[in-house]
Image (spheres, rainbow over the protein chains, first blue to last red):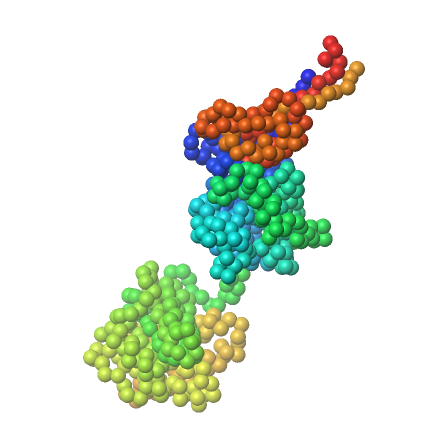
Length: 494
Length: 84
């Protein structure tokens, strides 16, 4: 006589649930008769039978099965409510050999996480979703779910769900099956043995699709919540089989498992150098050695710069060019744009901080060392932010009356917009202002070494900011030279 | 020489892992499970095997929401052994 264990605890579960509180560490935390337990067994059996426990990640949802990772002997991760699909996308993209199982309930998937879910389905991410639909919010105490049936009484629909007021139950499988990308969509029920066996096959098929990299699989399980629906085991099964399946018919909605080729995505790049090459492909200019320091005294402390004008005048670009110049000479720089929702036409400004040391806050709202202003409203608004020893440079073609200042500040102006119009391109006003700035710095503030450096530096910064647009770079360098020469003339006149 | 092998089955239920939902009793096609009358560690009554009649279909195992509360054991008996 010999004995053989035909059915017993799956190897996909931990032998003892160490993290489960309480004395009985062999069973799960679910209520008596809960559908989660049945589905857990099917999943555990599938991952153990396919021998994929070492590369499977189960994403636990928010809901009763939030502690699913206590039970499964595979990798587990718990994600914020509804974000299962986003995390699954990251996991499967970063590790294409991994098997990812998204376990979601009706609140997690059909309510808060529906957009995450449907986008992942539409992208055909290579993972499988097991969607537990019990028509109610179980963990929080029986509130109405998106999948609650019409007429179903819950704590938040005490008169029964009314389509006129709460809308219709969400048919997730039907909606997902309409998409091109998903490979397999089926709805099953966790009721009779026959239905559970169908569910078992569905789980295995979805996991197999994942192993074969066929793409996105969704299996919806009509599952019981006997405690919140106030049923016993047989009433629960009857409710699912008679009431729920009327609105949520069982069956396969889409199955292209056999027709599909494995979906091979580009191999992820982890090498730091390669990532840097891909993101910053161009080596700009000559560059300087790591210990290069500009000689001029004004660079010994933090420089706070603000540039303001109408959107479309090139305010933000001018800021970027100045920040790029700082970056190329070993400064830490920050560039913080600020503009109205209307973009072109509205007022815009940007704050740049240039510092050898670490930069604390990127905000400039006082003690501004350099203020470049391209229109009147900005001048009125920001002139009080100028530090007592600051430099103000404004466009005299848009600002006719010079501002009144307490003294101490250096004020310069250039009719940049008019010059740009003569030059043939209004968009170049910002480069003309940059030329003006360079002229001021050269004439008044910089040491000889830095003065010689500045023209090449501007060209490098322009090349960096307008990568690949040679014509624009060339035109802006011309505009810069024009502004530089005009400003030199202005300064000489004074 | 091997004789005809006779296969029987039995169900083992671990009392303290059972929560007494009764799903296995509903699932059993031969109705060989019933709800017991004593309490387990958790303070609920639990399902018990009547002692004979199990056909080893596994319906109770899959209906049970607990991972290891129910095991189904297959017993192989050699006719020769029985005669000896």
